Amino acid sequence: MSTTTLNNYGRYGLYLTVFLTGAAVMVIELLGTRMIAPFYGASLYVWSSLISVTMIALAIGYFLGGRLADSSKKIGLSMIIAAAGLGTLLIPWVTRPILLATDVLGLRLGAFCSALVLFTPGLTFLGMVGPFAIKLSTRHLEGLGKSAGAIYAISTFGSVVGTLFLGFFLFPLVGSREILIGTGLILFVLAILVGIYEQKQFGTPFAVLSCAIVALIGLSMLPKIVGAGQMGAKDHKFNILSERESLYGWVRVIEEPAKDLRFLTSDASMIGASSISNGQTFMGYQKIVGLIPALAPTMHKALIIGLGAGHMSKTLYDKYGIISDTLEIDPAVATAARDYFGYKPNGQAIVGDARYEIRHLSGKYDLIIHDCFTGGTEPAHLLTTETLAQLKGLLTENGILALNFVAFTHAPQSSLAAVAQTIGQVFPELTLFMAEPGEDFNDFIFLASAKGINLQSKALLPEQVQWLQKRVFTVDKSQGVVLSDNFNPLDHLQVAKAEYYRHVLVNWFGNDLLVR
Image (cartoon, rainbow, N blue to C red; front, side, top):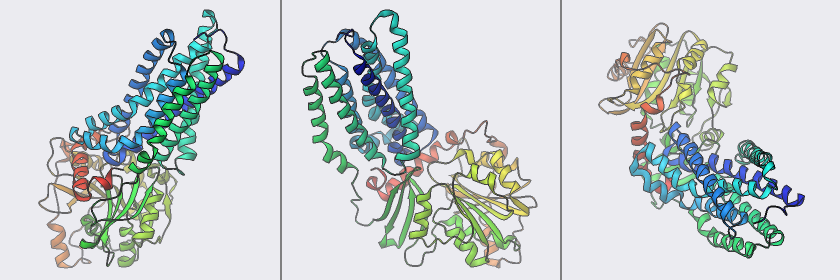
């Protein structure tokens, strides 16, 4: 292809092309975690895999694009863009079989291999656009640097706009599968327009026809691609009452009528469970937390971080008259708790990230329930000495922090000891309970305070005292590291737990409910 006949009209069209393909790169990368997270969680490993695969694919694309731009007279820019569109369109179709196939590889390798197979083809072709565009935009050798700088600047600007538009506007309104399908279709249209220009300006034979054929192949598969996202549970014993994709995951309300159970899940994490008939919670650790006000009978106000299905707020109010402010990051979870689990706010119902929101809370609390660490993926930034110090500042003089944490009782690298060590850096007194004595995989409830916990409180019945004493657990916190904003290996310490948790839910619900 001769580059000396590229006119100003073609140059502006080329700039628009690299702008749109730059935006498509970031759309695919950002949505990649939403395709993988329902199965592997939105952990550091998933993000690391996505970023690494993006860099690998773009590097391959730059290399191959440069070689083809110099040597090929048959493969034009339009065909590259059409291939990128097809690769993008296929992502939502093959996500499910790829995730299931890589499950045996474990969390880290499974997440990486899934990302590698799913996103490398489309991103590689998008990476090839840059070298082709530089070749087309360069009239003379002395203008090479200027052309290359302009192409990469516009492509990067496109990536910025794509990132902001997706995160701030598009994603809250449209599902990730639909966005990927839309991106693929836009790339098809762009490819045909570029093909028309190539055919007219450079006399490239069959440019439009080639792009149209690729687009037709993609369009012919569209019903299957759309249908792949509509697969429901094949096991009739489960009913999906609600399903919503939010910024933070797939939030589902699932019923198993035969066992009188209703579940609230976010991706592959169980965050609520109750009886269908009477609404009573089935989360064992909440029974322990529900007795905390009896240990300090002067409690009047509480803060709950991590709403779940809203059972703790209801229990504290109905049983003790305690007003609870709630803090939940995911509005879809708050909506599901209200619509399907009978949650009714009796204090402030705040939706937002805890680290930001707790800085703006001014009231003092007698009890803070920190319940964000029960799922397969955990917000590590909410379990650091800095976060706990902020929470301590919100407690009254006799206030108690209750932190629920799911872990193995015995593990080579104990996350349980790390949590105990971290809490111990902030609070002088710490009491630890386990929800199910004798079980290795368990909910652990840390009660931290300035003055200690009296298990012989007169507000407790003798059988309640005995029940609690059987659940007191001791951990050697000296074996754990201190978790801080600067150093927080919680994701690494919880790899075995995340893998086990995912397999438990897959065995319980089946693949059709967790992989869409």
